[in-house]
Image 1 (cartoon, rainbow, N blue to C red):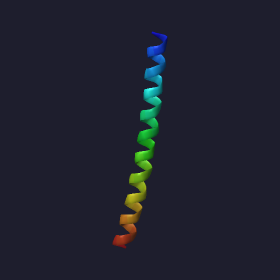
Image 2 (cartoon, helix red, strand yellow):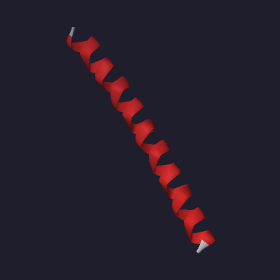
Image 3 (spheres, rainbow, N blue to C red):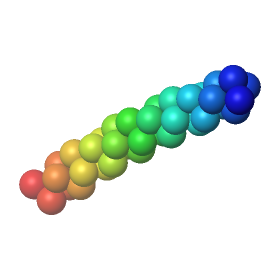
Image 4 (tube, rainbow, N blue to C red):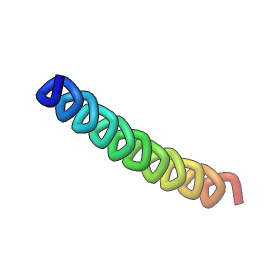
Length: 38
């Protein structure tokens, strides 16, 4: 039970990091697109 809880916690942390990373990439791409449009 304890090991499973630890694994789930790690998975949640990894997912959170992945989402933040994707958000940063999307933001950068949008800024580049805006610059190209302007």
